[in-house]
Length: 310
Image 1 (cartoon, rainbow, N blue to C red):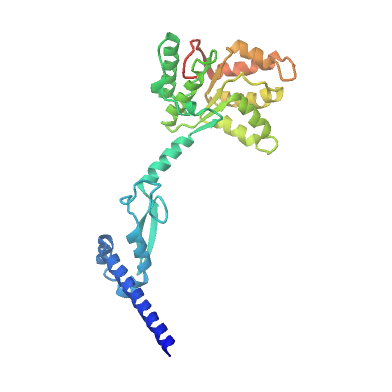
Image 2 (image 1 turned 180 degrees about the vertical axis):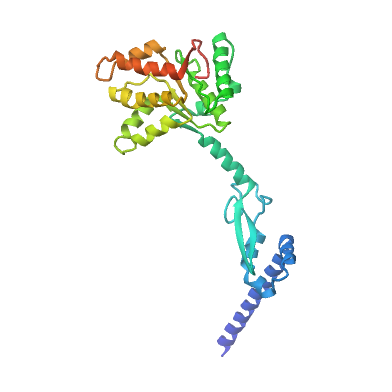
């Protein structure tokens, strides 16, 4: 009998501790000022209603409301990180509704801004380029910066403005300027696709295998502002020149959607480069069509002075 009595005593003591803990938690929850305010507004809630919904009230009590107990979004203590609870009452049933907290709203806004600029194999230095870092220590650089500011300031989806065809030797800051334009446009919620041209050729070729070529082309055709970095650095096929690059530029010319380019070639040199395919075929007329579309979509500007930005 002794073992049974001992076990019963332990069980009773354990239950007593559970009950005491439950009562302590209940008292703590009901002392919560926000919960007290809720109960005072809904006097129809009886003790049994409160006990039935105690777990939801406990969750609400322990949660951080409006980020008050969270150092930042990563340190959010709530069950749903980045969301703050609100109590809803349906008759005598309590439910919790979670909405984005201020930290979550701010992070989502930053992510949304970042998503406006899509870059294909562009260096981080270019992706984070700032207008304040552009130097204007020569006449030609002042001209480029002036054109950049003018485009960003006056761009509108309803009023076509040409992009820029910035050409010159390596190290003059051409790519950096594209990054500046993209980031300034991002501040105005304008979508930009910034593409390193040699990688673009590879990606579009591989898209044939996974049947995504047309969807990618549609994206580049329709994005608000399209940027090709280092056009002419790649060796292309007649197919890519005419069916991919030509089709994208033709569509954007027809729809009056601006394109920016950087190149080590001026337009005459680029035309000569594009006229020779990777098979050695020379097709001057087709290359001329591409360059004419570039002229219709962008304004040529030369940079000759080497600069640290590129």
